[in-house]
Length: 235
Image 1 (cartoon, rainbow, N blue to C red):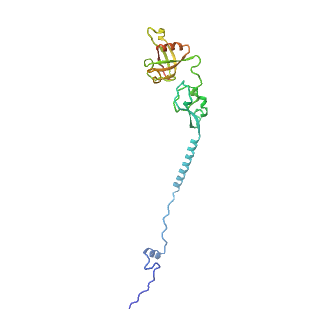
Image 2 (tube, rainbow, N blue to C red; image 1 turned 90 degrees about the vertical axis):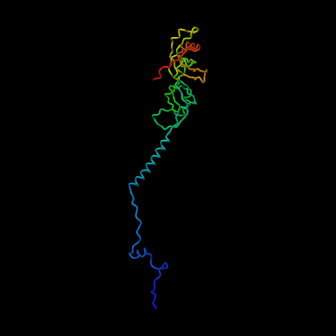
């Protein structure tokens, strides 16, 4: 009867070692280490530089927005010669710039009631050069109102500050002053009331004239014998 060969049991319960372990045991080597990643110093420095630049830009933006001051601006459009009301002004925050000839917001009350020396559009900043304390009409001047129909005024919309000439037109047999037909007076427009706000079909224009010329122009206007010529706006 044949004898069985004694076999040494495996610690795990049994048989031969797995092929991988047997191979490592045979050569006496440890498992290979994982590959090491290569570091790139230039890319790391570039990333740090971007972070620093972003921080500097954020600080600059914060300083730019924080260095502001309150100044006066126009809420409504004000034409040359018109009086400035409190409702025409508002305060806004703008960046401080020495080149801006702005007016501090706490001076609002000082400019209410003054007259515009030039046309000022809504949304623009108020400047000291754009206002005047001159009273209209000044000494030696008068303001005369003219009710004009389409045939006695330019088709171009009239604006405050326009330079015009007041012309006496022929009034026929009952004209109070036939000699006035060839007479013209220089004037400046200080007010315009459109037909929708005045007599139907007529525009009421207030003109600034010399005090001595006012009675004659008023008589022409009352007799319906007046027309306006719009002169150049250049300059």
